[in-house]
Length: 401
Image 1 (cartoon, rainbow, N blue to C red):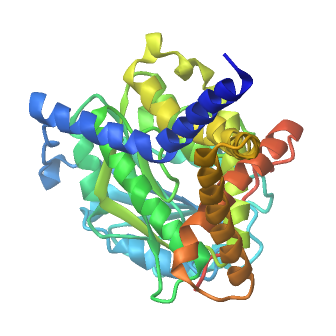
Image 2: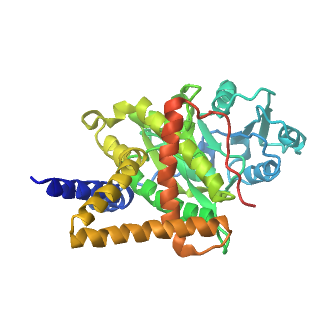
């Protein structure tokens, strides 16, 4: 085999890997779910009567959320759930703004118990949550972020899944609030999460969601376990550990948390770098899940949906471009056209970057720009993971208002 032939084969293998990571897995998943629906129709979760509904603790870790926390309390009190079976628990460790005072001063309803835990020391969300977990006495815990708005039916929709003893956790849906004149960060983030939500729905239908988003998810209290204090993305790690133990993570699109988009691409990049560093950390710690002989479908989903995006796909992109340049210079007309296509894509992304910096909004540039930003974040996240510089302290991206 000649060098040119070998490089052409490598080019197509790497291209196929990238396409599979971002688009192909979704198509494969869609087909598999369609087949499963025909062969074994999914049974809907049983509906609990109000008297049979389990008691639920909604746990919210809030760090310097004075701009959002009062709305969050009102939002939580509007849940369509028997008041005597609902407890709201806020932990505000390290907050040095008015967040604890606002919670403490909020008028307490008679039937819904609101509890506040605060200490001045800031040790991160994991330490804060672990500190108050002994205070949780309900069978179900729902975690949600302080700066999100959750729909009133969410708790009721989530707990229905626990009628199935195989379900150990439930992922809610994350939605991005987009303005009509959305900038690149808003539009890109919104499109990304719509696609992710559909993949999670199909993942759950096939077998299990592979990692919940922290904006809204739930676990059985007796399956909650201490996690290492230096874990970067604790929501992802917690739910995958439950799946690793043989339970399924369900998906409930009827329970959703609405969050404003990142204030800018710079803020979204900061968040993506943290997620990439945490994803690589989780891949290492959950490396046993890479064994399909032991974990079967879960391994297939985990590698296809998560691992490839945080490892091989970003590494493949510069190699594809380099190989394409070499083969185009060898005189291949086909690879010359392929090179022009790649140049056009990256040019669109560059124009998107240029316009975003000048606060100009042209939607056709959002997707290539956001795609490149996401993959760039993986390289930055890898650097932080390797040198241990990614802090576990809350570093929430600023959100648009």
